[in-house]
Length: 116
Image (tube, rainbow, N blue to C red; front, side, top):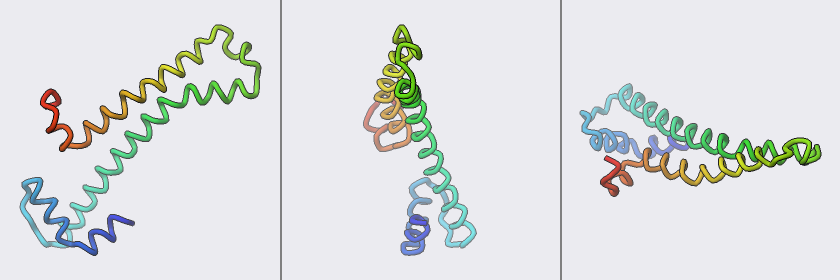
């Protein structure tokens, strides 16, 4: 909804975004709607990727903590391996999130030469 209000309030924003991509600018309402849908789809895919990475990284530890709160910790994980794997996934989130952000933001990729 927010993006719809922004594009309605600033209809030239779509043509600016099209110029930035090197596409031909058109004030045709159908073209503007297609560009808007494309931009919203890109934002949605990026949000899904970031959210799913967070769920994947925190789910093992969260499930361990939920299980141990209802059951005895020794009966769930006597050697502590599951807890260790959960902590490794949480630590992996520190690496995964910046990599995804660098992948999504062209401005940040341009700063780092090795990313090209």
